[in-house]
Image (cartoon, rainbow, N blue to C red; front, side):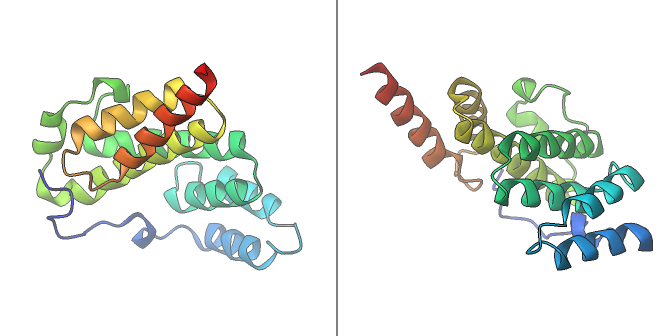
Length: 168
């Protein structure tokens, strides 16, 4: 399966949240520079804990604040929200190529979102120096994505280099 050969449909950001949640995200965006963005984002999260718009906003906020543990928590939650939409196994380690190839064409956008979210989890683990977890995630993505459309191969190589640097 070529993960670029599909027509994008059902993009997460096309899903509208309630006006109150959208307002909280807008307020957070306006107040990022002043350092007052977290509270509106958390309010949005409490109002819509399964909103990918909110979870992506939280991930970005925490990542750019260098709060990687918090970014990871938001990203793990996003993966948990996406997974049932495409009927993937609860544990990403159980993913096999047939999970991707058996997915109906109208859900390929969600499959890509899942895989990119898993890649983000691998990347955050790498930044947190949890290299074994990161390596496992990138190995799984490389296994599933033979054409490297998700771009995990280079990250896997970085993790392996980093692990080797600790060995010497």
